[in-house]
Image 1 (tube, one colour):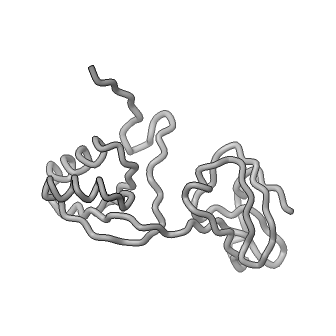
Image 2 (cartoon, rainbow, N blue to C red; image 1 turned 90 degrees about the horizontal axis):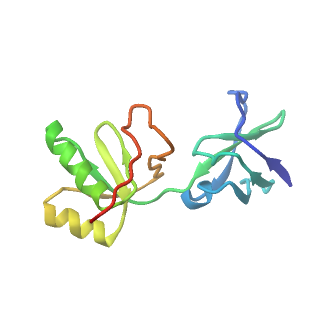
Length: 153
C-alpha cells in the first residue's frame, strides 16, 4: 500500500493518468483508503482533503489522479438578471444546502425537499449527474463571500 499525505505539487503533465475513484463524502475526509483503476492500493493520511483532479502519486510510467464520482444534482440556471440570481442563491442557501456556484448556474444536491422548495418559489431547475464540488467554507473565500454563522431567536 502506498501512503499519501498530500497532493503532488507539480506532477509531470505528459504522463498517462490512472484514476483513483472516490465519492464526494470520502474526499471530504482526511483518513481513508482507496484503490486505483489498475488495482494499486493507497492509504490517505491528509492534512487537508483532496479534490477532484488532484494528482496523488506518480511512477515513471503514470500518474495517479483523484476522480470524484458523479452524483445526482439539481442544476439551477442563472440566465436571469443579477438581482434574480441573488434571490435564487439566497433561497437555496437559506435552506442550508451545499451549493456549487458557477458563472451561469448553481448546482445543489438532488433532494426532494429542495425540489419542493424550488417548485414553490417557481425557480426553474434540471436534473443532472455531475461531479459536485460544493464550496468549502474555511475562513474567508477569495471571491466567494465569507463563512458566517447565525442564530434564531
